[in-house]
Image 1 (cartoon, rainbow, N blue to C red):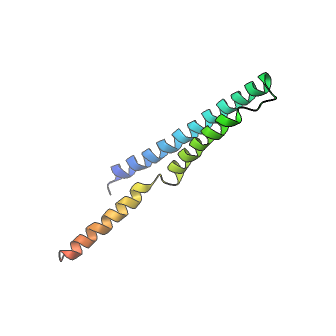
Image 2: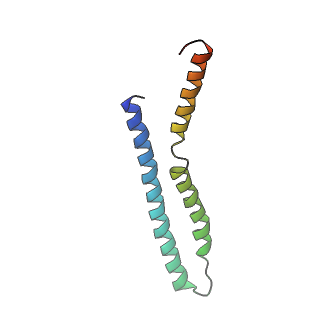
Image 3: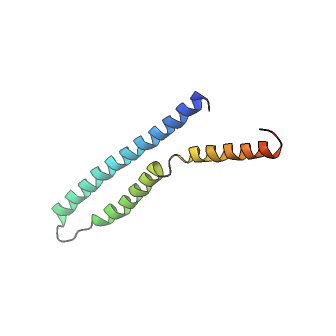
Length: 94
């Protein structure tokens, strides 16, 4: 694989990770602000938990996509190479 493709793939992974970190930072800031507002205005009712859970699930899914499923192109490339090798063998090549 050419170096330009390696660089583009690495840059895309780095960009995805950066965007996740920004998402986590914004999540933490907004949830902190909501918790503060909740405690100041109506400490008897804890309502900020709902956006914490809902948005937290979205952040968790974003993290899973970035860190667990992020490099699926490497798997696809390996499977493609395997298929090309099988095609060459079926055609009598090497």
